[in-house]
Length: 206
Image (cartoon, rainbow, N blue to C red):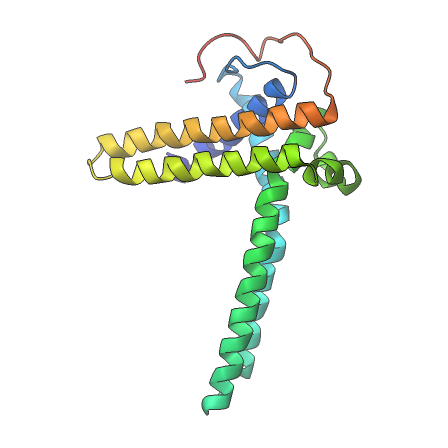
């Protein structure tokens, strides 16, 4: 139901809650309750991701606009357009991957401090982003998501049931990926272990 937006926002908020729990050493699944707080965290997480995604998106738009301006008759114009599109596409891809690498750490910074500005504090983020611990957690997280995507492709062969199974599989994979990021963040930032509060009970995540 992610296309309805609201469920996707709630799931994003739950990922923030997973980060907040695991960085404090709590491995029990957080509760999927207090939807108002989940929605608030989800909106902020989406905002962080959107800001970091603006640069590659703008680069693609600028590349397309420039290619349209230089386009014209003759083979030379076609070569120029092709070169501009190729270089712009490579840069956008590189920046997109960089954004994908930074965003989980940025959301973890927000989860720790409850301040959205912490997500853009590069002085605080740099030691985490350049560490092998975070890089390893990120790679494993991507591998989990990629593997889940492959399995989801097999499930989708079965109508309806496959789609439902794919939704749960994608949710579980995302939780697993953010679990790794949360532990890496807590280890690198030396986040103090705290007792669970009421938003992190022992009831199942789903």
